[in-house]
Amino acid sequence: MTVRTIRQTIAFRKPFYLKGVDRLLSPGDYGVITDDELIEGLSFSAYHRISTVMFVPAQSGCAVEMVTIDPLDLQAAIDRDARERIDDSAPPQTRD
Image (cartoon, rainbow, N blue to C red; front, side, top):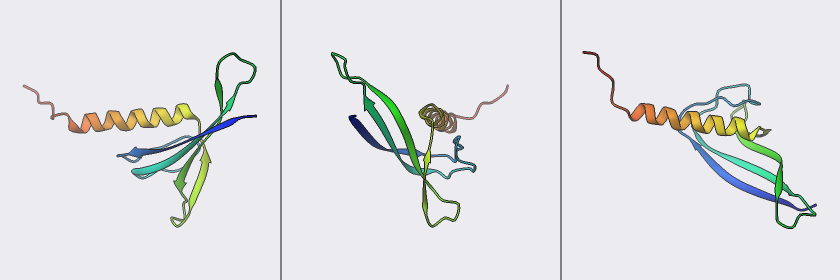
């Protein structure tokens, strides 16, 4: 079994919720690790995802938890954060 591990840091500018975490998470940088397994027997390299985890501050505040998350939920949180940043930079709408 061949597994590749991808590590990345995701920056959130606004507080956010994520399935699998029962509280509001603060803005900041979050480490994410994704493990993909090689699908063997093909004439080309292909992988399927076997896990995605995110490192979040523990509720106690002085430790870090590693939480298994759905990559689609993570992408939805990233998209919401990006939309909110765009909304914040838009000029206020006025009514005539």
